[in-house]
Image 1 (tube, rainbow, N blue to C red):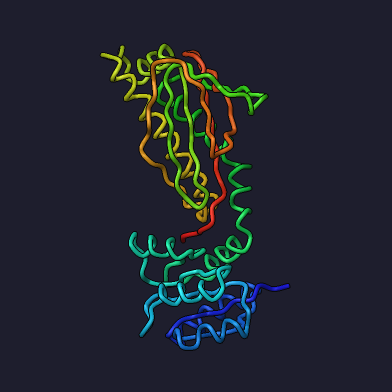
Image 2 (cartoon, rainbow, N blue to C red):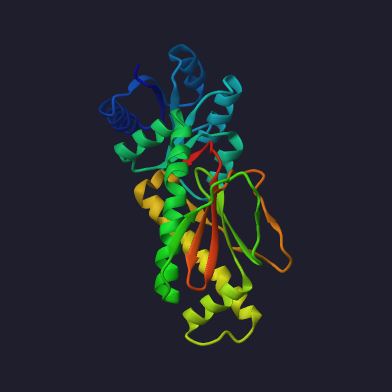
Length: 286
């Protein structure tokens, strides 16, 4: 059964272009509207699976139309399709409960991919769970080997449900995107000092220099891993937040909101714990 789409745009040309892209992708355009006046009645009559919504329209804009449509049907799946795309408009879309956001000029392949993922929201999450840890392992191995000149191998942590005790220095990187998550990197102070010396080609001056190195190394690994995943599918839209560093007393590494996949990197300087996890998202921005 083909997915039924309703196109809302005040421009006949835009409606035609979006409609042709949808038809070429195997989707059925079941209705069109050019303003709030015809939106609700058309939606209720054609009962689409998803609605594409322009923002800049006379009278009520796409945000107001989306709010009214969500009041009419709280389960309505709306994808904003507009030349306008900035932090403020994205924040407003999220407040309303918009499912996706595609910037004009619309690439048909991109629009089809967004609709597919909006209609099957678990698919991107499942891909991340399948590819995520291996991609982060690859980024860690490449960068530790290149920067510290030490080979890296990995051993599997068999029981992923057992809490892992910190070796001394833990860095947490938040991951933002269609499916948000986090990367955890943990190693001992001794290993960190040896890696810092390998990178700097001299002994570190003090503990602060070692900690700064650990935070930056984790940031590099997470950023490169996210870039690698985005190249495989730009719908992931992953980016990293600044690192949070914890050190001192032994602590249990846990993640209450995200199930972490774990691995242990072995180097000549000691072991590095790597944990990566994601949680399901509900919006897709392109």
